[in-house]
Length: 205
Ligand code: SF4
Picture 1 (cartoon, rainbow, N blue to C red):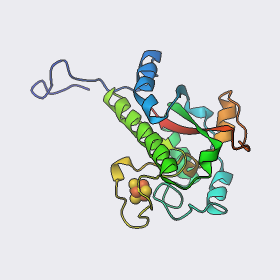
Picture 2 (cartoon, protein in one colour):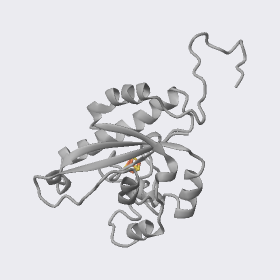
Picture 3 (spheres, rainbow, N blue to C red):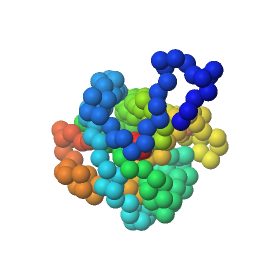
Picture 4 (tube, helix red, strand yellow):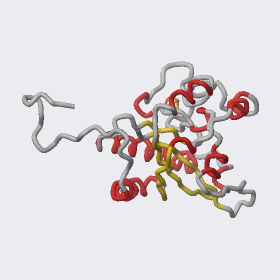
């Protein structure tokens, strides 16, 4: 893209990127920045490894207490067909992972919420860093549920729209199937002493 020479800020112009992948140097740099926010690993992968299934939407509609209570969950988020169409506009994604104690999962207190907020903000700020690196299509999907507010304002307007992102499952993504597709293993943490992983995906380009 050609810049108007009068508008160009010398030595401070980042080229837009498309189909250029992501270097391991940049991935490492991003990881260093987001480790403080509970992200312990970042893996780039091809978008076709993501599995979208209609049954995931069914699980959101029936059996999940978050349905119809958050801007980040169905029905406020794209239907499976729309999610497939959006994903088809990308070629590469990043999987970001963190680890937490199983006992924390059952908590309903400030400690649990602050961990979720930290991770959420870590994903969204990594997306922002990628945008500044020229990945203009970067967009995050986060795990869990948006906890930026104690109680979501849905269906009234979101309090922090700049940080509002859909939850991974709300895009009808089969997280376990996708992890298997990436060569990973996953199991249900049943003992309080166990650790469990949580995930974020950044659609890149
Ligand atoms: S920022 Fe607040 S209002 Fe907006 S989606 Fe998250 S919890 Fe809901």
